[in-house]
Image 1 (cartoon, rainbow, N blue to C red):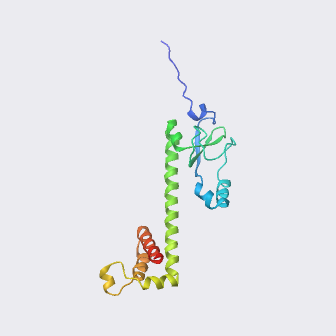
Image 2 (image 1 turned 30 degrees about the vertical axis):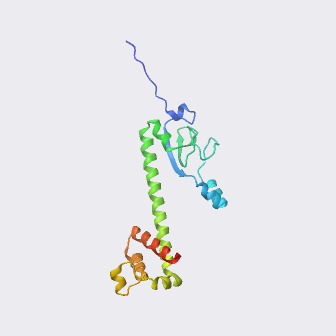
Image 3 (image 1 turned 120 degrees about the vertical axis):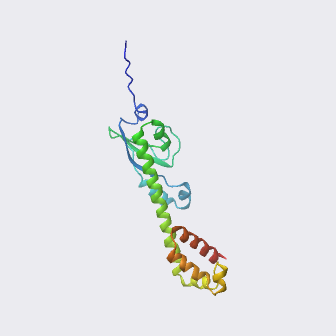
Length: 184
């Protein structure tokens, strides 16, 4: 009876990207093409501040499959080689530890980005509400609730309440309604 020993080689190692085991260094999102069109200087700065690889290969394509990627998983092999791959290619490796680390980091980055955007909306709403011209416009408009409007309350009363007392969703709603009111 012969025993066959099957040596399992990591897919990234087979592709010549480095030596296993592989670790996640970072997850990085490339700046959007719309930023390149709207503000080339900011786009170039974002690209220059992005992570580097040891292969000398560029951004925006997976070093494993060659497809265009937005979310770059920066992976490092035990030999120090760094490269970019998309999360789909990480999932195809079957390397459960690497897959879990990548998915956890992607979710963390998405959550941080949502919080950052929410904070920007909160600050924008607060800034609008400090502007005397906008407060004057809102003071002349009726409260969105008919009951309060009948008692002389205005959109300014409602917006101040939303800014002080609501959470993120209420703040976003307040911002949306105030922007709509001042646009008309």
